[in-house]
Structures are given as structure tokens and as C-alpha cells.
Image (tube, rainbow, N blue to C red; front, side):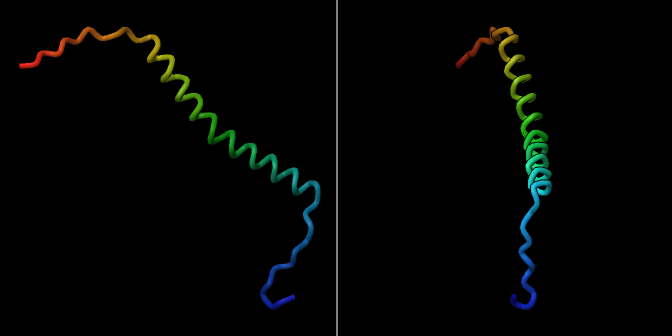
Amino acid sequence: MEAGEPSRNKKTTRQITIEIFGTAIALTTLALPIFLITNFSAQNNSNSTPSNDILIVR
């Protein structure tokens, strides 16, 4: 082993499981608000009435 090189111990099943759960929680935390925001804005757009604006060109 070289000086300053970290030891490469094998990860236990418990460590791998904790990493998988942590990754899943992180992805859910990031994806859920994005999904809710896009879903909410899509519902608002479908419920809104079309505007009757008139464009006057002079």
C-alpha cells in the first residue's frame, strides 16, 4: 500500500442498503416538488378560460 492511499475495505450489505435508501430519499426529495409544481401548473392552465384580448395594429 502506498503512503497516503486510503484502505479499500469491502462494504457490508448494510452499508450498501443504507446508501441505496439514501440515494432514493435524495432523488425523491428532488423529484417530488418538481412533479407537484408541473402538475399544479398544468391543472391551472387547463382550468383557465381563454382570454378575449383584441390585438389592434395601427
